[in-house]
Image (cartoon, rainbow, N blue to C red; front, side):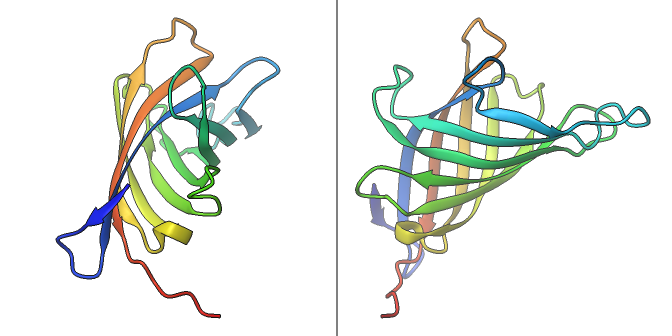
Length: 160
């Protein structure tokens, strides 16, 4: 949904969706591709993700996918740098993306906050913030995060 923005030439948007990450089993959405070494037991772990984003936790409708990487980038604690694209799949947004970056730690057990650092298609030059609230599943291998994405973009005339 887009609306007028207090920033001249920009339009605001607000999106709501659910992140559904599965870390074990045959339907994994995140896979470790580089494992740590003995000298640094956690530092450097790299995971690739392709996480579906739904309109509800009942998985009624897929909105898009979060595709990217997470890197264990802290020597002191388990903390990941996340960098991913949200690739939209709904007919009105198909081909549009948002680029997101941020930090995630297990201590963020209830709330997350990431930056929208870019966008394409309907969200050209997007900037904004992603607020996430972790939802309990009772299963450590399944993560649901309720996401609210707030931001603005610059609608541009595409060249022929």
